[in-house]
Length: 429
Image (tube, rainbow, N blue to C red; front, side, top):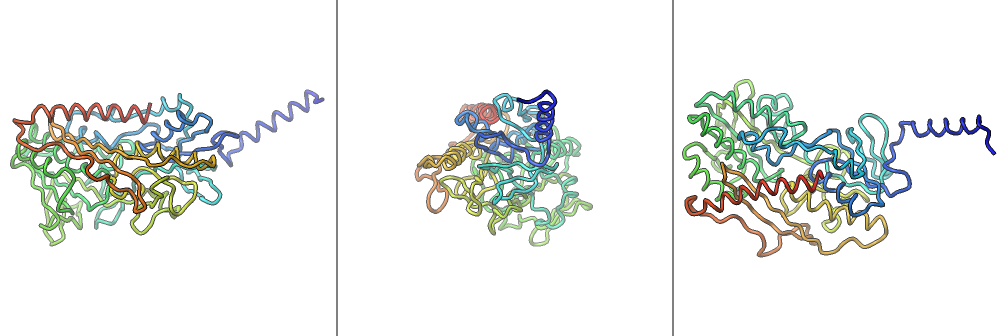
């Protein structure tokens, strides 16, 4: 029998233990699935885990309290969306029982299976879904650092939408007759068709509001995703407005000068610009690099059948941070692969065989103007050589004069809007 005094002491001791900040538990006793990153991959993984495996405690570590999507950010630049339209709250996931820690995941200890938080404290996991996205490789392009990004924004890492908003303001301030330049990196990088959709929608804005302005697109590559479709649209919608320079014709930007506002190319050509969008080289996010998960490519090699990191047990890496093989780095791929990664992680945790023979679909829509959409579809499978495209699968929108395909282009623009509504609903609830 305990006296009231003894019982009070016991309660106070328990409260002190619970209040101690040293270790943050995802949930006591239940298997602990921790997700780092709240983008398309991480949010989709968390929602799927809560739905399919209700006995598992799910915790997301994500510093931001809402997510600004890269998809449809280009429509903000074109003027048909605002920041609120591409910003998504985590409230619905929280109501579904997903726990959130709004802090930076500062370091991972794969041996102890712990995550150090930027604000102090440690989170333990049984299985970790790592979906941290990309990091900008500052300095890989001479003259391009965090300070230069305030002059020549990249608008390629969403965070709070500051970069895409800055680029939009620069376009609004552009004098009619000015030059908007794009520096496009070599593969691989996040969202391969993204720069060309951006060029299209900026061209649409300039055509309407700055008709004497020009676009100069300097590219490290000689070919790009949906190239024929994009260039058909440019010729029909924006004749004379866009100059695309491939890498073999001195399109590789090797240096930027923010004071002179110059893009310098491989053979020494200096292009004076009024507004510059630098899409720099990228790698897996810093936390993946610091945890020793990447290889010489700067990306994380994974087991293609389970997404478990080759260099660390019990860490399943999804989204843009891994080496996707034939699969593009896209929001759709992050969303669809997250579910197989979670199912595999839980199966391995519980001593079961992971699901077999997964198939991954990717549909990438691009807006190129008002009521004008195009798309590419891919179907992928895991193999001993990594992720490979299924032969005779997928395809792109038909090519032809706009006069003959106007209804098709209008429908694809509508499908693109429906896709965005669907994937954000699936990821964020």
